[in-house]
Image 1 (tube, rainbow, N blue to C red):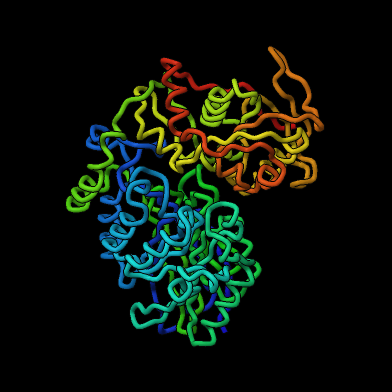
Image 2 (image 1 turned 90 degrees about the horizontal axis):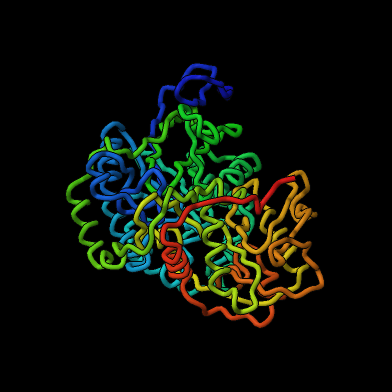
Length: 529
């Protein structure tokens, strides 16, 4: 038996290799991968929002399906064996999804000839029916191992836990993994029961191994932290292609959250940020016993230097025609960029969070509402300085959520904030952006054990401590009010709820318009102890 060991390296590629001589029948494979594309079929700016045709011509834009088509073809040409897989969340994020649902994603993924993808939580945003329509339209398997969906007729018999494909004469086992809390993050309905990722994946690994498959790749939409846990607590996984946490892994960038690949034991973990900004390219080698002997690579940035495939660019333009009128409507002006960066908004006060929370509260302040709470997971992009179009606002707020108002005790507000800061380490979307209150939290305290150390509510021109026994009027969006992102206390303890207010994107657009020229700001409303 060869002895496995991880070589730590300062070179441009992280690598796993063996200390002994290589076997004669080495098998090499290039794993091309994307994740969290979120309907960004057109090029995006450095802020992950829309990018003008002029800027694109000048090479200032990133991503877009036309660049991915080119990059995938070039990567395949470099490899003797390759697969193309996706880590979930193709759905939701732009007007393309709002208008076409999963149809545009299916068309583009078929064109790029994906081999498989896992179900992301956003694939359930419009229920099992839309997911089923997408699965019927694509020419590759869609996978999800950690759920019992036998009681959901739209998925039973169609959705698979794992699959086996062949490449270069070798069998590859692919397993899907979805967030265990998808029932809180999306709308899977009552007939899909999500289960523990470690147990589910190990069961599929054992099944595939018993069938003689000795090269196992997990397509995971569970986040970088969970992926490392799965790798540590299972046996038999060679590679995990991740998603959900929008994690940038790299061996060359100081902005990366870890090396590409990140090794946990002998399992290589990769992820390629989001929005089609990168194409992941991992080159792996197996010996004739199916042991992983090498894993090297680096995400390829889809910058303006990557040529756009002309046929794909033309097709995307055709698909965009019905969207143009609403998208190009200028609704406001921003005096400076408005930061909606995921890593900022999901861990602390951020400019976009203040804008959205302020806009929500301003809309209903004459209804006896004094507190606004917005989940950061609903904020999907930044906005550039200058004219702001409705398309940009809808890219930030793509979920068609409506304003929801209700009443709840001060104790309920504190419990909500406690939930909001309970998963900061995993950069989860439940982190609360607020208006009408300010709070201090202590990250050294265990989650849900009293991280919230102070809550102050606005009182005239000043601030007073929140009264746990007092009833407060609160505004949020209908998803959070219904218990989404763990805010179950709003669904169970909220009183006099009204969930059918105006669309949140319209509210924010009108608020910005009323300001004339909106200037982003932060004022210390969220602090750490």
